[in-house]
Image (cartoon, rainbow, N blue to C red; front, side, top):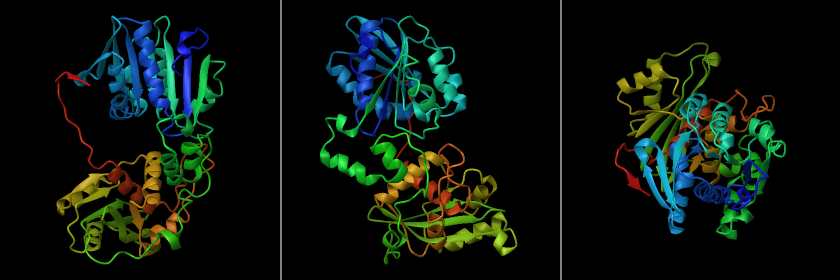
Length: 400
């Protein structure tokens, strides 16, 4: 990885494989060495799913090492720019986020001598292809890394399977390739995943999602009675429905664990009538039962219901509705018992035993059946995982 660019055979490099296998760090180090040795006064692209994740996953760990080997690194946060000086060469590294299809416009118009795409499989194809098209400087090269997804994913089919044809060096990483990862830590990761997530994140396989989504969950073992006694905090998660069922979950926190202790589940088809926003608001208040609810995490599409809850005095947060990331996060929190579904939540437990991957789509997606409590549980998990985040806006030039 550190020396592949010294020859002329390859125009690109692709690193995939297990999580925490060292591919991101080794690629980032090699990318900056290549850029500073081969170019002076050029622009390069550093791409992540978001600029925040790019800084967290790549720059935070990498920059101290770059400085240790003699590079001067300055970040201009207001410009999403990193300026690096080394061996008499100075180059500019532009930061881009490839969150959705509209992101392609952000990189359009740039002229780059090379681009590194961190977690390329999570970015839209339009963004990746636009980034590639920007690399028109003689000697430019392409750098991709990712964790595996499904075997029908466009990046797997168009780049990994066609690596030789595209003159791309393909390197597959395993956890054992990371010398900083102890055996104990590797075992912890192996325990953290199961099913499709184990095969992708631990074994590093491009494998299809099939069977139950939460195949590790066993009701008798994993769904206890709700703990007795006081809870430190309360929250409610909501999947709103009119023609489809509505599902609310009441979550209480004790000793760092969030228990889904009670639920509300209403199907208008079974009941024979639809409820209004006002009626649902009263039902949610009844579920809260006089407790001080810290916040209500709601399906972001339920605009009228969100407004009704706010008028009732509830603090409302619009949920992150990223299905793929949400399922990964929920599975991780369930396995680590950061969230626990209690025995009293019968509809949630019923859906968990039915919630399966839709193998007809060719992509990672659960069947849109019996998924209302599953959506609401996912909203809560994503909100919990993102807790403590925030941002500040500044125009001060910083050194990192």
